[in-house]
Length: 213
Image 1 (tube, rainbow, N blue to C red):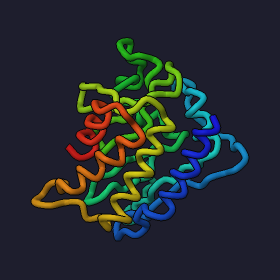
Image 2: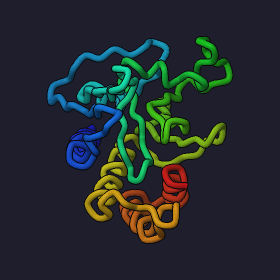
Image 3: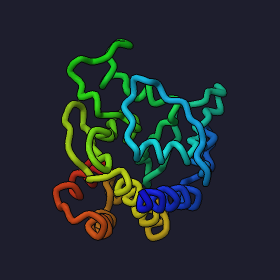
């Protein structure tokens, strides 16, 4: 778990540096890292892995707050450039992320693999899933009901998001769009950095299409 601990700390640090904090409609949340484990509440229906236990045991998710109606959201937004966003759910709100997947109309979905746990969404509708039944908690992306692997571990996911945010904001200053689509220069740069941490070309392409396709 030492590698995961380093990935978590780097992920939290990267978000604190690069994630946009100002908005006229949303008061941004964030992640507060606790060196010592903290207690967190999660619904008993949700499958957890050692990796998720470690993450939520050290990372307190502070949810975004909608200013106009004073409504606290169930997640925090991690901005990936020009409107692309990963919504990461707080531990106590993970049950809401399961709706439409492991839960249908407030009841358990009998056709759902109980080891799969949704922890967030891309652009509010494409679920990001952790396979808690397998070693290292590999990550699955979705387009509707199409499921595909995007990385072999939860630690790898955090590393990818850290690399991605640094690329988007440190190199491209948050502006990655050209002619209404991510620029070729950005996609090639992203592909290069992802391949350094993940040698699986199919997963790399899946992740790029998932985030920016």
